[in-house]
Image (cartoon, each protein chain N blue to C red):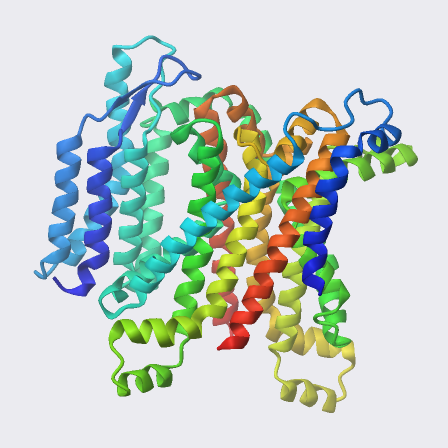
Length: 237
Length: 374
């Protein structure tokens, strides 16, 4: 039941905020534009969500593939390097990754998407390696004894047993993505960070509050939903 | 090909592609305009990568050492090579011209670093430390002798030395203040949660909830309440307390830091075996003695591991705090993005990354030191 609260809040905010100009005017009478109207809140939310979903999907595909390859017998020698990349990479602040993407791709959604994807790979990769490593050897031997091939063992035994940690990585990657996409509006991406950044630059607290409320509700919704999926996956095994 | 050679071959391939496909350097007319790509050593660098891969595949005695040496030489040599190229390129250009490093350079440099990391794993700790320190010394010596002065990044640093040092100091102050406050508040909170068995109660739940809120949103939302506080108590305002600036930034950073501190405090207290606790109680220790003589020494490494995460996270988040006027290295990043000055962005970004890595290493060293002690 708790899971439904944040998405409900998001929907209520999306429905109510476009009609809230008079409230914000009453709260901050000095502002000439008390409501952010450059882009509709729904569009901002959708484009924010789209960036996060796309980046997370790519990150999961890349992270999962790399993690699986690095834990196969032929790829084992890559494991220390893969781990080092995941550990060192996660000390890089998301802002730094975003800033590096700008000179490469210019302004707009492209550098944000690249930063989100690059940064999102690391938790998925780290958790995939950790999850696959923690599968009990007995389960692997049992699968081998039953005549499972290498790929069938991966698909039917290892990945289901490692699904909990992997989902935790996906969740972390998506949450960091929501935060980074917010900052992405400082480099020209249209996200829920746009009202915040414009409000900060133009000294318009109403814009800041509107953006922050929506992005907070969005982050909590995504976290709640992915947390639910994670718990389901952990219970299924 | 033995599987052991795989990392070398893979990283050499990345270097090879980087040498061929991405520009090594750019020449820009000034610090704001974008410029022409230049890759003067495509063949030589690509051949070096082929040589690396070949040395990795062959199992002749000493080929392992050769790979490590070559990687070491690449990490130290690539910046030198780039700055020598920059010198010749600048001779033919206007005085305002700049030579920033390209994606090809960075990819090759990163591949070489990962390669060295991988090859050094086989040798003893002392050897590893010596190799990395020698590398650092080599680069610092070359840098202070002015060997890299022709590169755009170093020029930007010289042009902005004063503001850069201020920003670095501000960043460190923000992070250190946050860390101390988070420890002072979070450790007792964790102890309380552990003792009253509220490890997944409302307090921890609230902190986890805050952790999910994007940093920019939390920073921005604090402006209102803090501005109100400063208006309500002018004495606070006189101390530099206000809607923007360091106060709301540190407040938000502490909120983010509290969850890991509380969680790791609980984990650290949980790591002390019940036997040890009971033995101490049996000896007649008070709760405070138990905490300071048994639980703290035994649980300290776990708490330190948590502080490492907090420190690295705080340095990254402090970069965002500049958007609410707290200063720090993030100022270079966002100001540079606003002006389109890529060198400035890179200077700020690399400084933040270097700071995060340095703090991470510092905590790792502290951790290794505590764990070795009996």
